[in-house]
Image (tube, rainbow, N blue to C red; front, side, top):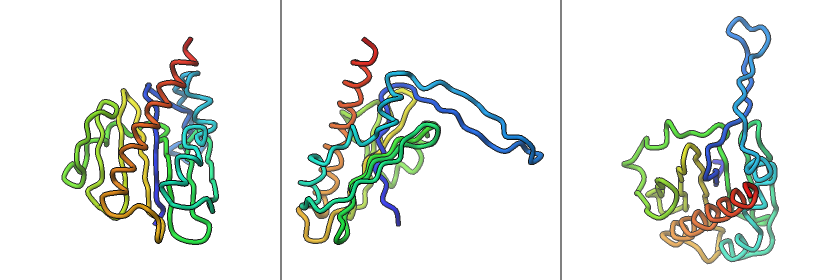
Length: 179
């Protein structure tokens, strides 16, 4: 199962999506502009999730980075343990999944102090935090490494703190670009 760590923006975010026409003809494009303050962040999502954030969480420097720039489409940054299990991932949904954000509340605990609303997954085998800020969503996820420093509730606590850190970095980036 692919572990996903999504971080989304603290401002409204959109993208250009293309889909096939119902008759199978030419695709239609629906363009929603991405605020210029977020375009660069989404083009380089690993600028928000740094290796220095990840090494202590996974207990190793033997990591591989994968980056998927967006938009159009989702943006993702992930660090995997090369020689075993373990991942820390940041994921931006483009477009936002705001409409579905509050689904499955029985599987998640509400967290205060991150964005407009935030939830942590109740499972204690991974740390997963979903955040809604304005019209945008993001999540971060940590799957602990074998023999690493995190396990059980520690992964959830670390994911919550990492979500706060990422949200703060997004706010700083957006503020700097808007000046």
